[in-house]
Image (cartoon, rainbow, N blue to C red; front, side, top):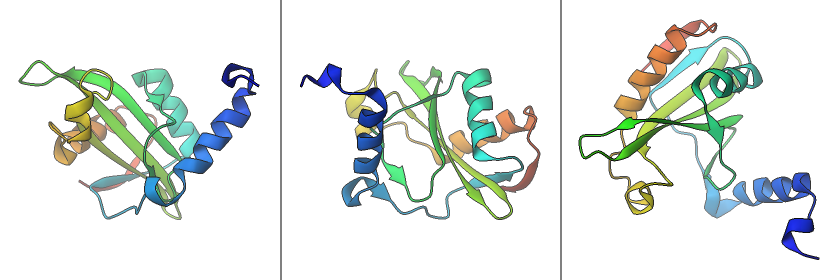
Amino acid sequence: MRFRDLPFDLLVGTIQAIRRTGPFTVTWKDYPHIIVDGNPAEIEEYLRNNHYAEGMLLAYYYEGEDFNLRTPWKLDEDEKQLELHYRGRKREDGVEVIAHMERSRYEHKEDHINEVGFSWSEGSEEMVEIFKESPFEILEDNT
């Protein structure tokens, strides 16, 4: 059987299962975050439809995450492409959303891996602005 002949859902499920194993799983820490109302699926749909966010199968899995999205954002001071990387998970009091800014995984692979241009504060600031203009209420701001 050739790789391209595999059913897509089976392939995605296999990759997702691999992501959730030891070396690809990261403990969700107390990152700068907001809590918003709604559910993860609604928030993911909003970010995809209104901010051109896309998912990526080959990314670290933060324990408990419900979505993992990235949006091409802007150029940094070195004219390098940045992306805003969001993650979200359901909690009893709403959906916790975290975000950081980083150099593009496609355009600047080595910088991306080495976290050149990585910023929790810049990503969190942009995330708060996005959610202020969204249909989701910010219930708590811990950025």
